[in-house]
Image (cartoon, rainbow, N blue to C red):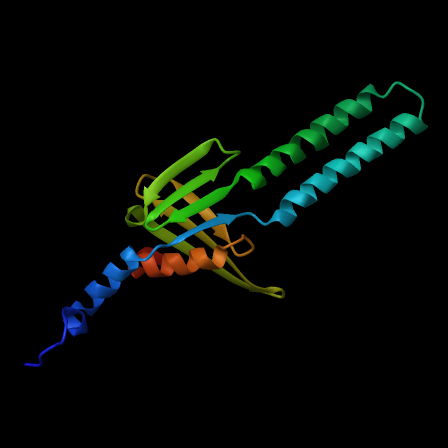
Length: 171
């Protein structure tokens, strides 16, 4: 029987030690949508404001139909998409994950041990590998992580390290 200098050297305790170290490490980061998406929506709004101003100045009144159509089909939808992308956030602090989505109206917090399953979709495109991860909690809540999001790589690494491999399904 071999003598070990400390308990962590014992192969039987190695997995236990590794999991214990993961729990003790300080992990903190935030996953958000890329700022380019937000600024693209703002540019679309500015373009249509300029278009309406030029049309108002250059053509004789009335402009009521133009104002109603632009408001209904451009300003309201683009404003909602802008807020939707800006307010989406996944925050990780150690083993606690907080999610804010759907214009900030849907918020939930759970421990990483409450993850029921993970669907990891991979697609190789002409532009590179695109990955979409859908995380389902034990409370039937879910959220998505896309490759283009800020800190998506850290979240992917976090999921592979912290979630049991049997719960991750690659597609």
